[in-house]
Length: 116
Image (cartoon, rainbow, N blue to C red; front, side, top):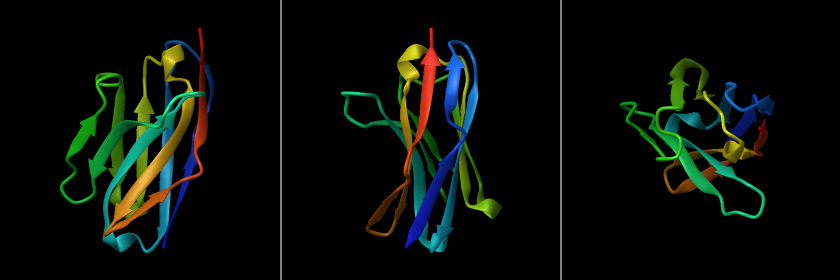
């Protein structure tokens, strides 16, 4: 089993920055990739960014390209999401996702609210 704990959410104004963290614990040796998703009220959960654990290949949703940066600290089994130039439409609960073998793990989510 893998446990994921997100942190770093909060209430900010448009144009501000936040950095989210997702710390993985447990059986982390088999993790293949980690990603961030978000879900706004009344909307489906959507992909934000992903990083492949081995090799570091990265991908982003078009809506966040150029503003968000995903990174990892392998020694700490932690993934970060640096979010710059935040917009009100970025308001959502942000979830960390990890994939290990055939198993998908989700964190509990952290709220990000961007006021205009």
